[in-house]
Length: 211
Ligand SMILES: Cc1cn([C@H]2C[C@H](O)[C@@H](COP(=O)(O)OP(=O)(O)OP(=O)(O)O)O2)c(=O)[nH]c1=O
Image (cartoon, rainbow, N blue to C red; front, side, top):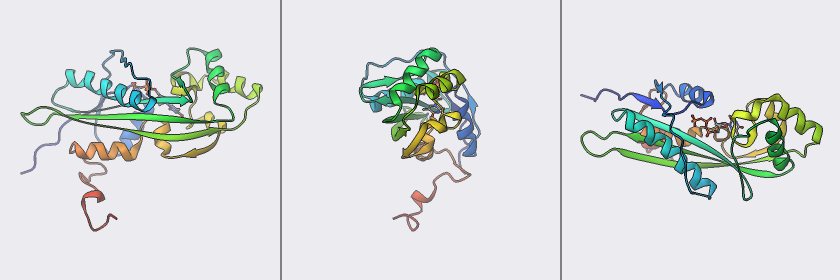
């Protein structure tokens, strides 16, 4: 007899993450802890993974019987880490810093699963995508900043919207830029026993179909 599937909780207020997780055919609830996450990490990959784990752990404390998934996206231009811009003026500064150059988008993902009567299990990982912006005129920068689209987004832009017009090239997983790298998300969910597209294990476990 197989065990009843555990409830899945998406520990995120992001509408993009909600939509992408729905697309995987996973039934889930959304719970946001409201706790502010903080990490001393300055390495952007480690920072994204750290913050994703802290978001998941905060909700796991409230719902110890559920499988929790959380993520965090960090945009890095050289030494500069770009969070969400405070206002249109700072958004313009971000876009100016990214124009005509290549930056990195890191999303850390964390899945926590209660493991029967023993300790909980935690899996996490981070994905990197390189994004190159077109050279932009000041008029274009101001137009985009005034649209308001980038205000709730790391790096101050949304590649899935008007911001697509800022971008010349993408190298890596597109879904990672939108905040939920699906290849990584699927692998971590399956480790926690969550079925994706009705398949709990996927081709990776079928042997014959993998390289
Ligand atoms: C670069 C980029 C970021 N983003 C979004 C993804 C994330 O939602 C957001 C980064 O902020 P995060 O702090 O990772 O997430 P969030 O505050 O939106 O949601 P939560 O903490 O509740 O999970 O930026 C886009 O939607 N498109 C883009 O092109």
